[in-house]
Amino acid sequence: MYQKILVAVDSSPISQQAFDKALFLAQELGSDLHLINVILPVTQEYQDASLIAFSGGFYPGGMDEVVKETWSNLEAASLSLLQDFCEQAKKAGVGAELTQKIGQPDQEIVEFAKDWEADLIVIGSHGRRGLNELVLGSVSNYVLHHVSCSVLLVHPQVSSDISQESAKIADHSNPV
Image (cartoon, rainbow, N blue to C red; front, side):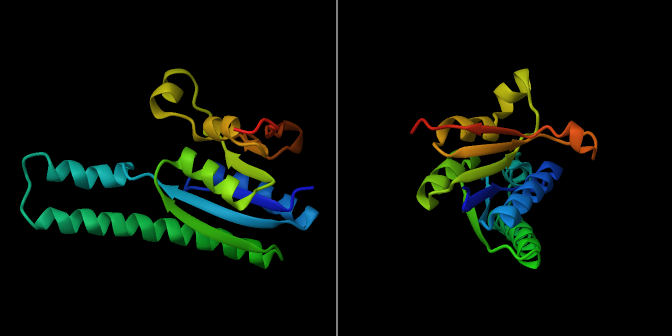
């Protein structure tokens, strides 16, 4: 059924829930996991260093190092996150690989899913609605509407009670 499961993760709590669901499915179905994290070049941490550089306090040569160090820390944190998830999967007896990308998360996830020929994408939804979704965007919504494979959209759990599980599976058979 699902042999190639792509799991999009970041450092949010919903990513752990999405990973847990993907791991469970992979164990039950004998599937392989591929974990992806996409670093957006304008994340808050990177913006903080960039804003200092352009706020009138720019010191030639000095800020370049601060920005490089900040960016290096972001990449290291992303890689560590992916390695931790991979290790959890391997301990559970599931084959897992990882990919770190830089770019627009929604587009990079869709492109990778197509290239890797994923059967299923598991992704968390932060639950943004209205103006927040319009301003901040919705990676999960974009992925949901731009892939031809199934998508398991995981919503934040309000309770550990399985009867309140709020994951939705959307099967899209329309090629993009």
